[in-house]
Length: 223
Image (cartoon, rainbow, N blue to C red; front, side, top):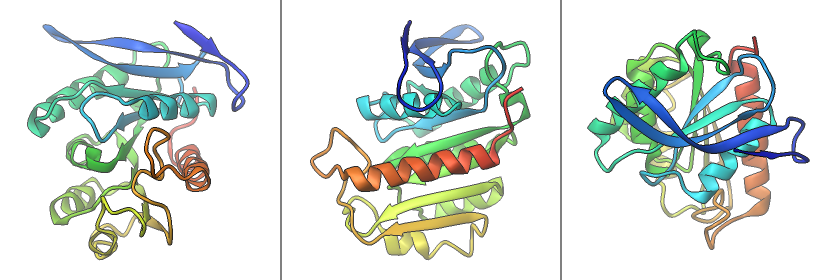
């Protein structure tokens, strides 16, 4: 384990982790405050099956703001991913756990195609209380899943992002009235991803500020 200080207000621990799930052990990346207590928790779905360097960095940023974040190792199968994410959420919500208060509700965060896994989990797990979507196209199926979940949501999109269909996403507002939309007029594909040629430092900073504020407002407080 390693401890990082200086950015944000909270000392953190971050490392690759193992999650017991019955007869199998699941992998992932965990970042959490390095203090006692049970912390607000977010399950993070990136655009790739395994957590990317930027997804790991965002997990650490969340932890430095007092929010534990776990990005599970996933597969190319969304059906298998739902099984994995439900097992991970059950682990987080186990009241015998030492650092997460997910038994009272937890958040979900996705980037790009991670929306398919986020929406499927939110639809089927009543412990999800808040969801943030970044640079994701909300199609009719995912909108219906989010409507069933019926939780506070935040969607952050950019009209300069060629990987998403902003108009299709915004057209789903009536299906998911609890979701607030933020649409940047500029910000290229990968505006949120420090490893991308389209990285936009200003848009990234604003995205982080918005999602942190949203989770602080909507997640159960530290116990």
